[in-house]
Image: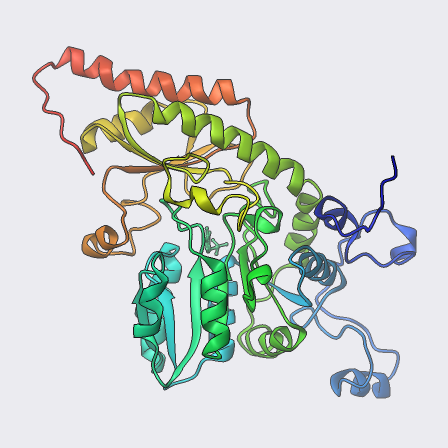
Length: 412
Ligand SMILES: *Cc1c(COP(=O)(O)O)cnc(C)c1O
């Protein structure tokens, strides 16, 4: 058997891409450059660096060797030219958007996106004279009617948080190319292991690095990946002048996390599948949202746009709000917490937590009912996680037997 190495497989890139051989005194792992500034050899050198005539570091808000390796590694993993690391995922979302828009511009936005991204588009951008149209992008026929002469950008997220609906990236990419719009996709739920939006013509990819990329629940950070030209604009705008730069220490932790990303995503996907299948057959669960299930609308994109279904599962209980709270309070292995992509399994209630920036009307329009529960499936043994969900579901039944007169209301 002959195996041809190209070193472009993601398992190899996440370990080796972005490294300079022989740099850093030969250190195997990239050192942490915990420094705010860099010393010039002379006044002339300082002037050359500021003028852009000589490569080299100046000041950590503008660039840092540890951060740079993270950026180059992410660019390689997303198969794009360059990247800019940011202080949080929201700094990445707001930064990518603000770098290219100005008063009088119009942006088309998917109506179902991360709660704070929704608040950015709904509350902040209009303050600066930027027009926003929210569109149900699950049907691409809705895109053209939203187009205006001043439309400059399209922003979407897929799979959609928290009911995991999938958008057709090929159709969105083609639409943006045809009408010359900058396309931005938040790919946080997939990581570059499961989805590479550039394959479908998307211009800019965003991640909350807080989630799968770092994967260990000890950092908040973001990353923007795109063409060298777009990233240069972003760095000169949001990093230099607005200042949402990542801490080198956080970049260093994410570099460490990235080495195991493909291994972790593999486990997140197999655990997610097992838990989704368990929940789907449980009488107290009325609906499960997970693209790995044939019953889910996003299932047809598996293998086509997504290389796996990920580790986030949404579901609706056949129970009233009080029973839902009792269920969440009864889990033992799961932690009641927002965020996702950590080794630890997490459980949360979108209507009262991540999606509280929406009004109830906006939530229902985005398909988020009061009875929806979202879990981020961690890296524990799937049997232990299933046993935990099972005992917590049983607590609902036990409570019903104590108070048989309790009315059971569907929450969906
Ligand atoms: C968490 C998240 C964000 C925001 O990232 P932070 O690191 O919390 O600022 C943006 N988009 C999605 C899809 C997320 O899950």
